[in-house]
Length: 146
Image 1 (cartoon, rainbow, N blue to C red):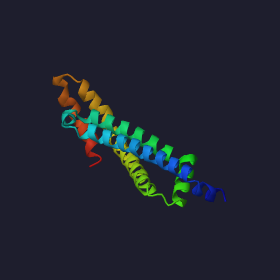
Image 2: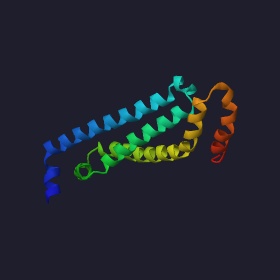
Image 3: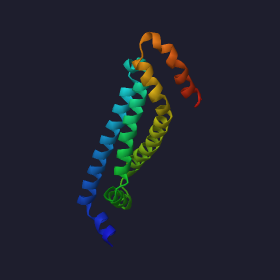
Image 4: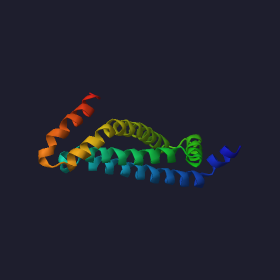
């Protein structure tokens, strides 16, 4: 079959493994870069709007990667490497699963946090004497989800 020909072509398998290794590195860079920017201690005092922006950005990144991983060409490469018993496939598949879970987490967090976006934006723009008037709305929005 065509698959058997691909698997027997050691040069092709090696090129596909090199591609998979490259993708794995790129995905890890996105994940670790995003995590590092979020866990940075300088971010602790940035407030809910920065948190919303972080989860918005993370959701976009992970959803994009996730959809790319579902492409037909990626699936075919995975199938060839699976039939070739490549040792590089499991770490890549584990990472793809982590992307799926992370994408879902980011979307859920963003959905929750978006309820706070308008009241927190109003609070951020308020003059000091107006802040107390905005707090009940922020607390009501946040408390509805706790």
